[in-house]
Structures are given as C-alpha cells and as structure tokens.
Image 1 (cartoon, rainbow, N blue to C red):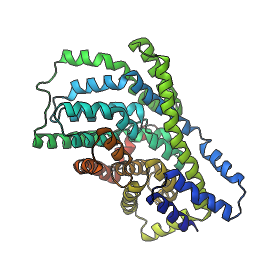
Image 2 (tube, one colour; image 1 turned 120 degrees about the horizontal axis):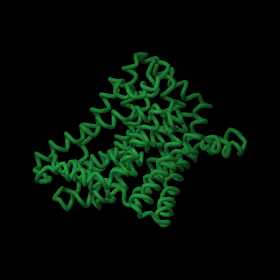
Image 3 (cartoon, rainbow, N blue to C red; image 1 turned 180 degrees about the vertical axis):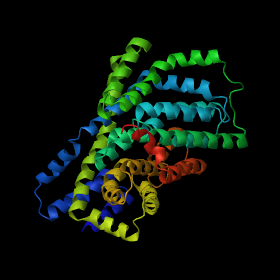
Image 4 (cartoon, rainbow, N blue to C red; image 1 turned 90 degrees about the vertical axis):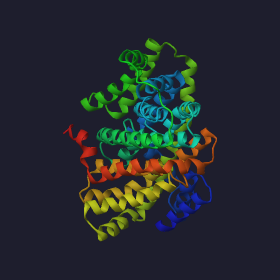
Length: 424
C-alpha cells in the first residue's frame, strides 16, 4: 500500500495538482480506508507544527521581507556594484556578490530571486547583458541563500533529522563561499568570451569606504548572526528574532525610513510565504507517518545496505537519487518526504548527519534550477518576461560550478564539518 501511495502522489503531481493536494489526497484516503480515527489528521498536523526550531522559518522570512520593503536590498546591490563591478562580467559579478550578502539575511532561494531579481535583471539589461544570461546568473546566485546561514532548508532538515540546527547552519558557510568563487570564475569566463561590459576602472579606497559606510549597519547583521551562533549566545530560533530586532533598530536609528506600512507589508508577505511552507510540512508529516506505518523506510534501508555499506558509495547513490528527486519536488517537500527514509541507513553506515544535511540541500538546490518543477526557474522566467526554455539554455554552464561544489563537499566532508567541529 505504501508504494501505491507514492505512485498516486507522483501521478497527481504530474497531472498538475498542487504539491500539498498531491500529498494530502492519498494520505486522507489511507486514513479512512484503514479505519483510523479522523482525529488522527489534526493530531499529525499539530505534531508536525509543534516544533520550536520551525519558529525560525517565519521570523527569518519576515527579516528578508523587511529588508526588501525598507530599501536595504537596494543598498546592498549598490555597494556590490561598487566593490566588484570592475571584475570581468561587471554587473553579473555584482549579482553573485549581492546574492551572498542578501542570503545572510533571507535564507531562501526564492526570497533571493524575488528580492534581488527585479533589481539585478533591470540593471543588467540596461548595461547590455542578454536577458537570458541575467536570469541564469540570478537563479544560480540564489542557490547561495539556502546553504549560507540562516538557511531555511537546513533548518527544516535539522527539524526532520533531529540533528543540531546550529551545526547545520555553520556547516553551510564554507560550501556557500565555494559556490560564490566558482560562480564568479564561470561568469568571468563567459563574460570575457562574450565581451560583456564592466566598469572601466577600479574604485579608489576612499570610494570603497564611502560606499561601504551606508550599507555597513545592514551587513553587520551577518556578524551578529554568525558571531552569536558560534559563541552559543543564542539558538538559531533566537537568532531569527535577533535579526528582525536588529533590522528594525537599524532602520529606526540609522536609515530612519521605517514606517508602519513597511512592517505591515512585510508581515503580509511573510504570512503568505510561511503558510505555504507550513501547510506542506503538515501534509508531509501525515504522509511520512503513513510511510513509517508501511515500513517503507525500513525496506529502503535494507535494500540500499544490501547494495553496499561503503559510505562513499552510498553518498554517490544518494546524490543521484536526490538530483532526480529535486527535479520533481520543491526542497521543502523533498526534505520532509525523503530525509526520514534516507538518513537512518546512511548515518548507520557512518556518514555524519551534518555532512549529509549539506549534501542533501545542495542537491535539492540544483533541482530548483531544473525542470519539470524548477520553482526558481519559473519565477525568474516570470520576472524577466522570457520563455523558460531560454533561461534553461543559459543556465546550463552555471550548473557546472554547482555540481563541482557538490562533488567537493561529497568527497571532502571537512569542507562542511570544519566550522561545526569548532563547537566540540
């Protein structure tokens, strides 16, 4: 029956049903078909959402929305333009650099695409870049957010796998920086070959200082966040609240542009985004419980461990599986449905659960850029007003640095584990 549920889920997805409906319909049918009390539905929803770590999700989303509504995103972009506009690729490099800075305050790929996308696409087009290239670099740089703290996908993974969210967030720092470097190198090569424009000369030190001054209070939130997590001064959930409080204080005392309408607008956007995530978590929790009742995780563990118990071989198998899963499921749904199945046997085989978390999310972020689901792909296509096929063609070269990062992180666990190990 468990296999039948999974098949029904994918069939509903492929014929166009929303993800949450595709999960809920077979789950509800199963509950009634086997005579479970109807109260089970509400109990599973309550159990799924009654989680302290999950509180960080809507609060971090609110922080990102507040930055957009108060103009902090624009300030970040302007400084990034000044700092790296001279590098081959010019505005494309600015896109990547701004993505890194913005990711430390949003934590989600779609937030980065939706927040920075309209600004970067318009600016790159005005500088002479092709729309498809601008859209591709926007989607690629958005993968930094879900890896660099405060990563919402890593928070969800930690809640599902019952591992330290603090260590997961810290584990994403170095892999995210590797993505930044490789994306910038790839962008430089493509830009030189296509003779894309860039700033004519490097800014003077004085210009950099003057340009940094307006954005420094906003960027200091990164130091507050990472410093507080490393020192243990606050938990990831508390860090989310600190971020919001810090952004409000900076806007009140430094930028002096915060109004009640900013707070309300950010709140409305946060409610919509958070609701879509949390309702998927609720439905996936019921689906996951059914799979557990049907002993699907145990069957998967027995089958995969019968193939090999070598940790490296297992990671290769899981990478291939997750890349395929990422093509059909968004990261939240995939994490909630797949992690409870794959994590136990891999951890039992000796794979560090923190390392596995980073590998899992890296795979799923590549999925955001690939059809048939590709949420980031479709979002940037809508923003840029160009066909998905054009964006997809331009994205292909940028898959290389992401896959190289995935390979490096897979085979060299120290890339992700060095900083978390400092907490021991």
